[in-house]
Length: 133
Image (tube, rainbow, N blue to C red; front, top):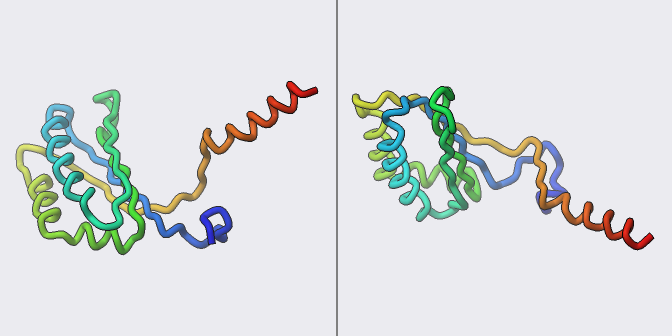
């Protein structure tokens, strides 16, 4: 069964991990460098698809960083996050007394999706039909 034909109440096996971070602007660069090391470790794990760390354009934004990662399954994500080295690095970042970080992690399934790429063929067909008249 493809994702397009899956009933609405059946989640996709691909999961999205989102973690939002409250952190002061002066600690962003150091935190990003540490995050990049943790992400490099996770990228080697089975089931990893991709990850992006988004940085707010304004220092006034409550959540300065937002991590969005995709995994082939919940089981793959759970196995990867159970890695002792990942746990050690994560705890070190959270326990750093110099940097106050609040994170809110969670796993998500897509509820609604739109894509410009998916709309393009329909728009192109419509333009071709108009030109042919």
